[in-house]
Image (tube, rainbow, N blue to C red; front, side):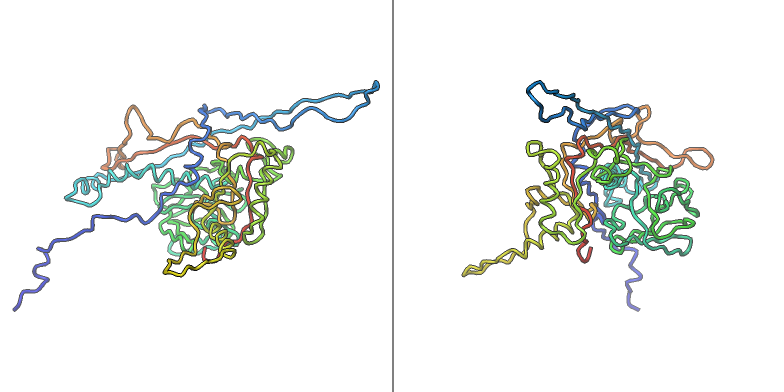
Length: 427
């Protein structure tokens, strides 16, 4: 009987492709823009940001024939206050995973080296997502819930939702709050290694705007909020991101100041209520000029999701004329990357809100920093062993990246944004 392949399979060489593709992003677009701007070293006490909110003095006419010149006044100053937020990124692995991949003859990726190399990139990506939040740490809004096998699957696709599940991250843990952020819902049936009340994501479907949690939260309904891991207060408190500072609301507070009492601390808003149109951008920038005057206008970038860049491009395509020469030519119907919007360079971020365009003056952004992002160290150690159930050393290790800072803006009048934009089809 002839020799068959099944008899020689043990002798066959296994080929593993050495290039390992990464199936997720490490984008940190907005954070990279403001990371180095106006860094102020602070203690745990709140930092003060002095603001001149009223000009002072009183101008008018008078009677030079002995008339009363009237009384004057002076400028008014106030202070914004900001504290830091403690953040961490934990990376854990077993000794077996390290030993099994510590040589090129064993594996195409050295696990330990890869964890060290990508840890900070992942931390920065998550900080970038947090800069898209409004100070509450809300990362997504639930539009539908399905529970099966002790796991909650949520969809985040409500009308006007500019994020879907983009700000969430596979395998990370999150909390659930009700729509008013007054009640924190507790997950049950979760792994013992996750923080109390939180649950990890074990299925992440960006295209369908769905995630599945390894656990169930009692009372979870549409309208509830997915909140970053860590905060437990009601409402939760987190980084002051772009929508916190670019906010024209006349209610609530901004860095401890009452928005209702001090209109000077409100941002400039242009409400679209539909698809992007050219007058919107010019109006948004002119609103800054109305507040600050021509001589105080500063360099601005138009920060947006690529879907709004596409909407802007479509306006330009409608106004384009193709002049065909009498020769064979390549067809290019799209504009390049050097776009400007009302004079402001266009910058895209895939984690940006799809329903708005923010005109960002990076020079007015700053960071109150108690601890820069770095390894957590204890007596010179950066790597820590875990402990087993007996209390003895476990064959597993962990390291942490930590930071403590927050973002501030020292001139809200220099900020402006377009809100209520329609999301183009397909996004």
